[in-house]
Amino acid sequence: MLYKLRAIIIKIEKKFKISLFFIFPLRFILVCFEKFFLQKSTEISNLSNYKLDFEKLKNKDLNIISAGVGTDISFENEIIDKFSVKKMVLIDPSIESQNIASSKKLTFEKAALYTKIGEKKIFRVFGDKNLSLENLFGSKHFDLINTITIDYVMKKHSYTKLDILKLDVEGVADKIIDNCLSNYILPDQICFELERPLRLSKQFNYFRRFINIIFLLKKYNYKLYNCTNLKLGLRSEILAVKNENK
Image (cartoon, rainbow, N blue to C red; front, side, top):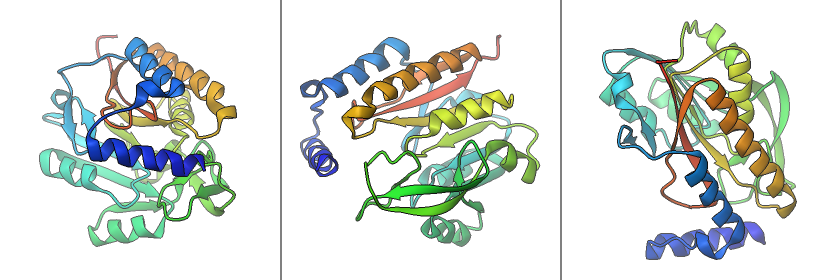
């Protein structure tokens, strides 16, 4: 019921081009968190549905990992068109993603990016192509899929550095980033989303994790930009840019 209600609210906001975040306390809290902990900047530019610091991408042969591509690879296509890409690996557990990547002759790993290599349940909702290891939807329906890690991908594809890490992984971006930094893999830029779960019982843990990943990234000298334009308070879209001066 909560999932259907959220879908209806999103349709209303999209149709009338408004945001009703201020009506819902938890959405309002998340928007306040973004304003307090993150910064807005004219230094970053739009690339598909994401934002990047273009100045840091010029005159480089880019190494990119993009996880959770789903059926939309517009970000990946645009970055190939605009910049010089040396290596780019797409990661997703779905057959639809694999077919799209194959048709474009892109390097692809059919798995879910996570903190461990193995097999794990991934949850789904009927009629929605999004999949979540964290079960953001409160669904009982799941598939068993293979999981891989950042360091596994880096070693397999002979990465020596990582310029861009893009994460659209439905609830586990903070865990992947923590694992990444713990292995001292420090991407120059990290595009990620922190999706807020549906269940009321998970809200405190969500905000705790939000604060933890913000402070962890700042500890590693990243500047954090608020990139959320749509679905205010339902998810937080963030760009982390490594500060070269520290």
